Image 1 (tube, rainbow, N blue to C red):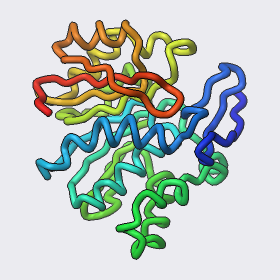
Image 2: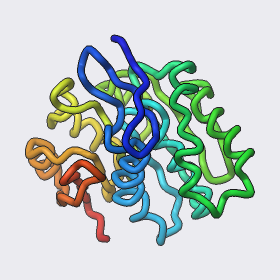
Image 3: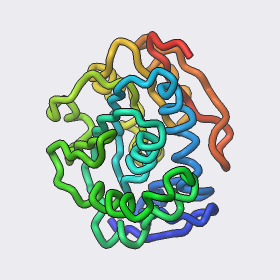
Length: 236
């Protein structure tokens, strides 16, 4: 499939898949979408507790969500173990063409004295080996897994506190948004967890509710009216 680098409305880039008419991030802004859906409506709910946090990302893609989570871990001095699943990894050339560092780092002025160090960490996060844990800082480690989402159990990782569900849209991959995959993901989480996604489809809400989640529709990122968060035995 042909992949093209495109600029989004907040100035950050994304990858556009011409055959699917689908992009990796919102055309209204890649970085602001990631910050809104996965940090504001996911990670931020765990900051006050200051407990070690284990995160699963369905759709590692460009590594944007992992990078902003690393910076949040550093900013809040919170220990994070991060597992990202991706079937078709982005190439090094595409990573270099996108280069989210400056677009993201402007949101973290408190880390400015570590800019060059974190720029190196950012590149290492993307280029590090797959299928094994990589320690990127005293607060953040990552395991990237190259596999089909439906083979999630093969990575032998469980006890997730937080799920970033960032698969391609249902118009191109409808099987990603059905109960079967939600059941697989849910089987790897703790009894208390949060599931956050940019989607707001009724099928997603029904599937999560059948698995015991309280589902909330929340205001979406720029360009999108709503998004969805599932809470399982979790009080905000």
